[in-house]
Amino acid sequence: MKCMPCGQDNDSSALFCTACRRPLVAPSKLPTRLEPLAQPAMATAGAAAPVDSTYGAAGPSTRNRFAPPEAARTSRMGGDSDTLTEDEAWAAVIGDANTHYYLTRFERLARGGSGGWHWPALFVAWYWMLYRKMWVPALVYFVAPWIGLLVIGVASTASAGLGALLYMAQWLAMLVVPALMANGWYFKHCEKKIRDVRSRGGSRDQMIARLEAAGGTSGVAVIVVAVVGIMFIGILAAVALPAYQTYTVKAKVAQAMPVGTDVADAVGKHYEQTGQLPSQADVDGYVQQAPHQSKYVSAVDLDSASGTITVHVSAHPADGTYQLVPSSDNNHHLSWTCTSPDTLRRYVPASCRN
Image 1 (cartoon, rainbow, N blue to C red):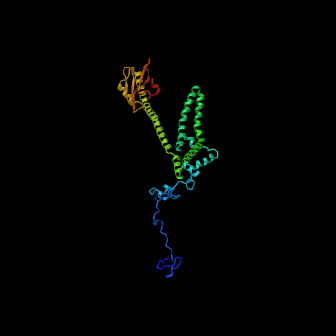
Image 2: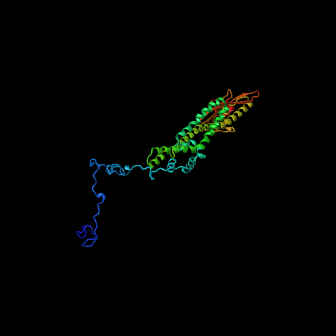
Image 3: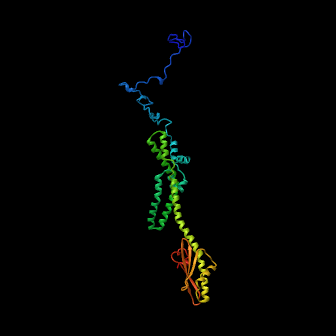
């Protein structure tokens, strides 16, 4: 063995150099990365390729160098890190919303107990089903009342009492049954999702991703609530606005009615005293001196032949007139009958619709 510091040749079994007395060190093997690559298995005809548990049966020479490192690794479902536990499966399919609540109820149901009362299903069962991605139950819950009403309608033709009883029973069933059964329905729904995902196989991360996508919560319920809210506001506006408009026109007409009554009383007194009808100028004076004044009365006309008083009402959007028709007795006392054309008939008091 040659001493590297001084160059003295020594015996192969010697531990120290005979010249400089320094310890002899055997030459080390070159690092693996500097050793020449082994010949690939295909270069030796008829030679069997070594089996490598890391890369497969063909060894490292057949590995795709451009694939990610995990591409050649096989899934080990038996390993602890790749095993999907029951807790992880249930937590993934339920999602982050009320996870502890449902896990507690599901544990009771798994032991054969009761799932308990579910308050959201009592008040908003349909929206809760949409929120929890229970599409088929939500569809059944939406269609069932209409089918029930059809059956009740048929039963009502035979007996009105039976129809009313069935209607009350349906109403109570739509409220109480979902509240009692919601946790059980959701338990079976989640159990089916977990069973389907496990049957497809895959790694732990893949199963969790599939369960989170299939379960959890959905924003569809919020969209449906918003759409229903907008529809409700639209229906309310379609009903309330015409009713409010009718109310305002009636209030304007009601304010204009006393003006015609005051003018009729003045005309009646003039006729009793003189036996003749007053002129139009006199009527205009009566309007200005009337105890009741209204900005919705644009003019008051008197027919000199018949004595009919026509009151012009400007109650936008329903402008029109109503008339006071006189009738006289032997004492020249006038009594008045109120009439109205079609434009104001629905807005004047009932006594003026003849």
